[in-house]
Length: 459
Image 1 (cartoon, rainbow, N blue to C red):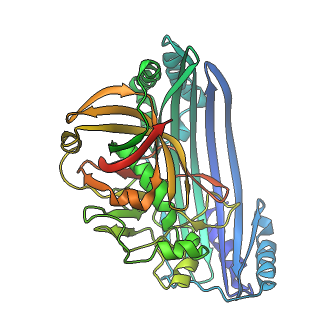
Image 2: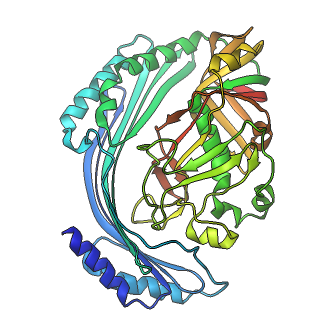
């Protein structure tokens, strides 16, 4: 079907609808994946999809319907309108945005769809063999995926968009065991439109294997409060998970406690702390980047914390109207099977001055933590597992230790950040999960940061 027909069908289906507001999103997608467990290729496949969804707004709420057959479009519009019209309650309003018509091509360097599955398998085989061929490694895993997606969007206000994106993600991990002790190491990387990084992971595969073995003989760190220096990957995950989700306004207006906590103008850190989210920053071509979100709102830069003060929140058009603020371009859906919800894009702590060495030089006895395995948050409380931990002694990084967990209150922890280096790096591995929509491509990052009185325990 031609591009002209998509636009024509969307506009025709919207034209005669009886709702206050209607939007249609149609997606064409192709994806490929390979997954290994130890030396075995456990799963390999290619899939494609064509489908769409309709959201209709009455005075009091949304109707939603999805479909896989474009001939059903008009009927699905009628169904969404019917659903919306049976709702009652307080009116739902949308913040105003200027209608736009735009066609956006992909960010593309090396298209993964032009690399055969057999070639991808050969590349990944070598990484599996490297890790499993390292003495002491008990098991390894490799997970690779890529997708090409084109989205056609139109709404009853006159916006029509076409956007295409190409996403790639790869994770390598190794597990080593000895005398009942189990240690793991891993690395996760991704790209918006460039397969080439996948070809150059031989050194990383060997490093992952070597670190998992080294951790077996590494000493443990006694639990307690320490001066801790975080690398950009772990600091980026921290700001995404522990603070970024609290900034999503659909949480805020439904949670009275969050409304109290997340008051604009409240101080959350020192003057050195600045936090930003945005689909157009800090550089183009990140996995959380796009020109327009899934409501047709332009991607933009949103300052969340400025010199320690909360100054912004992340919005859809609905949440922006509810809180009397501007829409920020953060309404995102993982596919046409879901309605858009408020999600992060590229979230990061802005760089300060100096180097990681400068932060470490002032620490007589502390811990340097890198990478991450996961964690959890509950309101303002967090727990994260660091992938690596090293003692800091007399201003120098010393011995490798067993991994640790960092936990505490995010706002107390933000207040305890007393050093931010100038070496901003963005992490593009993995993805974000929320409300059953996972993994959504995002990026997060930070310079090295130093935190006083951070609670550590064994992982």
